[in-house]
Image (cartoon, rainbow, N blue to C red; front, side):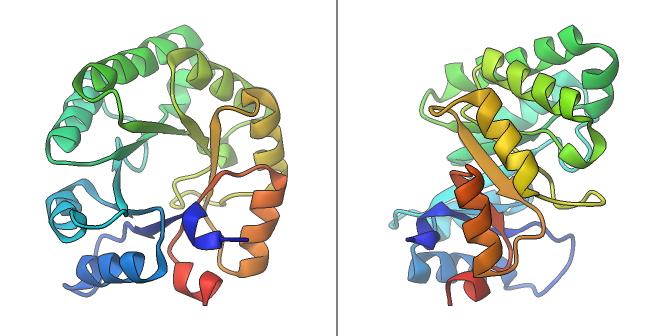
Length: 215
């Protein structure tokens, strides 16, 4: 498998080496990863470093809890698109999903609509944070994401109590069908982990251990 093309090479830590994002971008170009995924504050730097490469810049919206207001999520997303991000990973409001699914859909629809108007080519992913959901709620989240027009559903932020599982990826793939993307993220540390997720139906992987996986 050409694993590198599946990988969003990720650095979302709140601290770390001051040159971590520069290192991330160098590695992404060297290995040919699909994108780098960085926190919003790091997007301008990543865009600058990768502008002459095929590596995309991905960032996160409403991260890591998804509890921001709709207006703030939309504003953050539009700011990131203006600053050059190619892909946005939105965090679902889990409480809203559980207790008012239609209000949750309205938020997702507003986010997608604003982004499509600003940049129709941007890829939009919805992190449903599977570790907090029952299987029925995972199905519901995927249905709402598809209905709102997201390009991907994603398993996890990597900041919850657990990350991606094969069963979750299989379930998500079954619900969204063949045309929509499924991103597995959280706890993918080895080549074996990565291949299991792809075989389960993942079309993208969010990894911070990308070098170990592809090395």
